[in-house]
Structures are given as structure tokens and as C-alpha cells.
View 1 (cartoon, one colour):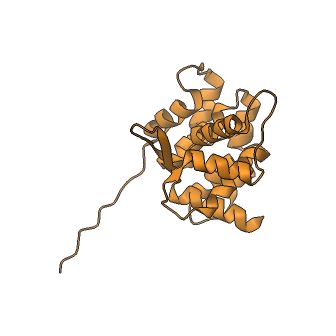
View 2: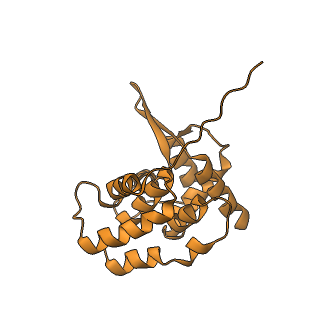
View 3: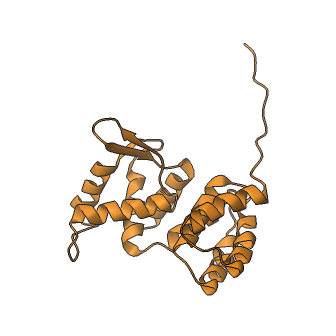
Amino acid sequence: MGTCQAHNLFGLSDNECWLLFKQYAFGHDREERAELVTIGKEIIKKCGGLPLAAQALGGLMRSRSGEKEWLEIKESKLWSLSDDNSILPVLRLSYVHLTPALKQCFSFCAMFPKDTEINKEELIHLWMANGFISSRENLEAEDVGNMIWNELCQKSFFQDIKIIGFTGDIFFKMHDLVHDLAQSIMGQE
């Protein structure tokens, strides 16, 4: 029986990290203001070349349009959390800035085992059954659930999204580290 040679994987360069970050932060429909670009390039240096970190931060910044808001993220105390895993402060930062409804729905996902393919529709029904979401104004509870799911997806909490053939069912997974975050949050509450 032989062994396999180890391969060292390197993170993204700052430029590659920036390209990924800006795709999530600005998308195709948002102007890249010079002052936000400058701050954004400083923020991505904290990503350590990790694609998930760049995606999560980009998703977080997408809903923030002011220079002050971007500076708050850049200068957050959460960056200094001592942790062996440099991505957890990034993920925690993304979590802290969620609305209470998004936090509740996200942390609920910790109940699924790691690497589980989760059915979107079933998850939304579980959120409804547990009283996390309800109808509002002229939106049904299921529509509210879809909006919450879409926002969590845009913020890179969900990944590996698959649409199943003729049924149109949507399945997704949570990255192991995102799942770890959800579990640590559930352990604190």
C-alpha cells in the first residue's frame, strides 16, 4: 500500500480575492465608487486568500452603500478574535450583521448534519412550523421564507445549489465552516 504525495494549495492572490469580493459586493448593477473600492481592497487583505471569506464579505457589503458602513466592517473588533481558523471572524462578522429573522433562520440550519443536501422548500416549511417566519403585509409566509433563503444565499451562507430536473426542487448545502458557525451560535443560545 502506497501513500499519496501531499499537495499544498495556496489561497487566492489579493487581486483574485478582490475580483471575487467585488462580484458579490457590487454585482452587475451597482456602481463601484472609488472610496468603497479603496476600503474594499483593504478589507479583502483580511481574507487570507480564502474564497469563502471573499464571498461572505462581498455578500455582507452588498447591502451597505455608505463609506461609514464599509469602514465599520473594516475596523470591526471581530477581526481580532483569536482563533486558529482565520475564516471564522469573517463568517461571524457576516452573521452579526444579519437581521434577527435571518439570524434565527440561519442558526436553525445547524440541526442538519454536515454535508447534508437540504431541500429549500422543506427548510422554509420548517422555519414556518417553528414560528421563525410568518406572513407580512401582502406576502405569504412562504414568500417571506423565499426572500430569507435568497438573502442567506446571496451572503454565501448556502452553496452547491442544485435544481432537480422536472420537479424544480432546489437543494443546497452549507460549507463545513459555515455549518460550524451555525452550531457554535446554537451552542451559545
